[in-house]
Length: 267
Image (cartoon, rainbow, N blue to C red; front, side, top):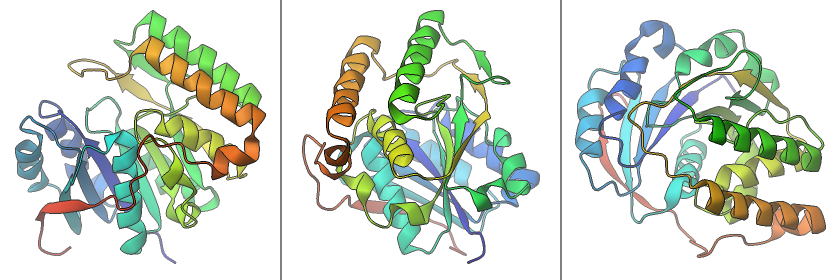
């Protein structure tokens, strides 16, 4: 199957940033590598939807759509909405580009241009590998991330430079068995996902990022996130098979439904 790459942009309270994110896709040297862009809004109470719709008008991709989750599914839940959509619509790959404008898709496009994604299952942006540049990222958060990267690397048996940045590319076929659906729907989804990808032997490669924190609001609380990460690590260590097979969600949602807010002609 020829490459058909969908860019998925999860959105929550990012009215100030989503216009800048979508503007990245106006560049024809970027747009030519992708077939479509799917913005998935997770019940934002601000003007995220309106700003995204206005910015989408200028994006030169064959497919453009905005979905709004039927409930507050969390970041992980929005991933599941996008994965289901991509598989149903016959896309080969899914790019995850967060809507809060911390990462730049320009860090990924040279790899796509070179065909790096064709021989891999996961291309993972890494804020903490050589060559990356962090702007406005606190020393405490950097240290905490590096410590957990090291712990996860030991447990997984692979060198992990990041546990979940806001810029990744996945081959969609890896999700057909639904292993990801049992992972938590909150911010820890990426931690479950990267451990599972390592355990399942998926081919993955990290690449450096330019990462900026300016007017974004971080939802990650260091202590609470740290406790959750230690709990899921314990599950992975003491019951590796159960880690993949167990239900990790607080509420098991059967259908991650969403409503189409806007779709553009030519989709």
